[in-house]
Length: 85
Image 1 (tube, rainbow, N blue to C red):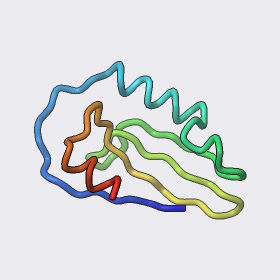
Image 2 (image 1 turned 90 degrees about the vertical axis):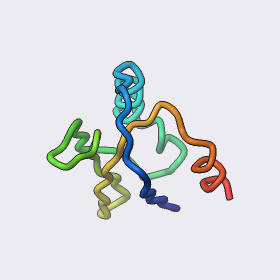
Image 3 (image 1 turned 90 degrees about the horizontal axis):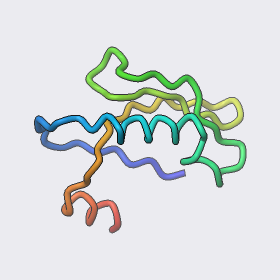
Image 4 (image 1 turned 45 degrees about the vertical axis):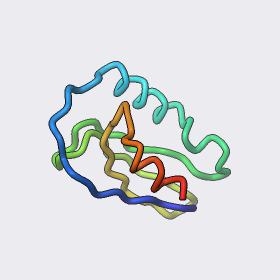
């Protein structure tokens, strides 16, 4: 499993609540891990204490990883290029 952690400039943007609702529905439906046998998303929290939009656990067997995330409805091209390479 490959995990990518991103750090970048924080900018003030208007939140897209419809996108956030869709993303949360996707997490609850296990869509991001659908093709990963034995992996599931659990303990989803929206707006945890930290400055993140969502917190959840990835579980595989007895292993658990806490994931902190920020919702973005658009990705800057430089970041997209970095992710692809």
